[in-house]
Structures are given as C-alpha cells and as structure tokens.
Length: 143
Image 1 (cartoon, rainbow, N blue to C red):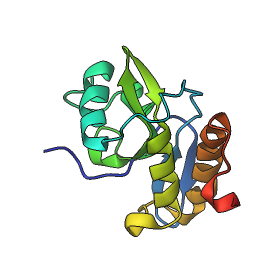
Image 2: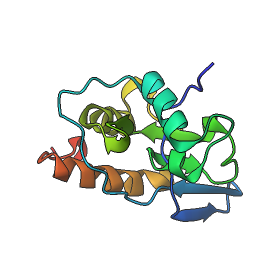
Image 3: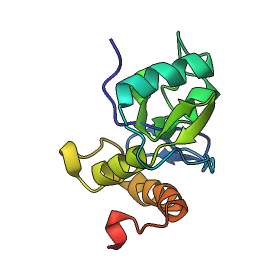
Image 4: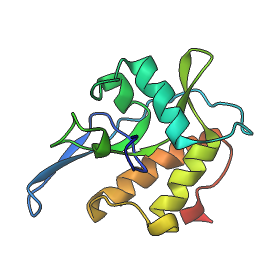
C-alpha cells in the first residue's frame, strides 16, 4: 500500500533540538515544468518516481528530488517524504504545476495542513515560491 503523505526531500538540514529530530527541506532542483494542464495524482506519480529512482524497496537520493521535505532521521522510510511536486514525464523528472499548487495549498492549511515543524514552513514556502515564479504566478501566501 502506498504511503499516506503530502511529501519532498534533498539536503539542507536543520537540527531541531527541542524535538531532537533532523528535518530537511530539500535543495531546490530547478526541475523543468510539466505542461500546466497535466493531471496530478500523487499516488500514481509516486509509483513512477519510485521506478525511475530505483526506489522500489526504500527511498533513494533520486526519489528525494521529487519532494520538498523529508524527515532526516528516517530517510529510509517512504512515509518520511512529504510534499511531492514532481512526476516522471518523457523519462525525466518534472515539476507538475498542479502538484506545486497542491503543496502550496497544504502548506497554507488546506486538507488538514502538513505535519512538519513550524520552523520549516518558511523554507518550504521559499522553495515552492521558486516554482510559482517559474509558472509566472504569485504563491498563495503572497496574494
């Protein structure tokens, strides 16, 4: 069964001493954008990303590239990856505009929000804002 997550990841770690947890907002990958009207289904995208990344058994660094955030203390667990924004299109990883918008909405509290440390929210927004800029849109928190 696929993990339930809203999830992302790549180096850029913070140590939150009060939680004694290493959390990570992924490094901006500057992925090319998929067509704006491309349908977004996170479960289906996750299957394709796992196959592309060689992550059938456990997450890999390539798998992390499709996400904005992951729990650095548990990088070998699929459930540690949140805010997915990418899918495999024509053999390569592309940011999907509808996924970026979904992640932006979740960060703003839609669908119950995202379970990440409050301290990471601004860094997540900064990462997402770069994709909004590529789409020539203002992120929802700037509207």
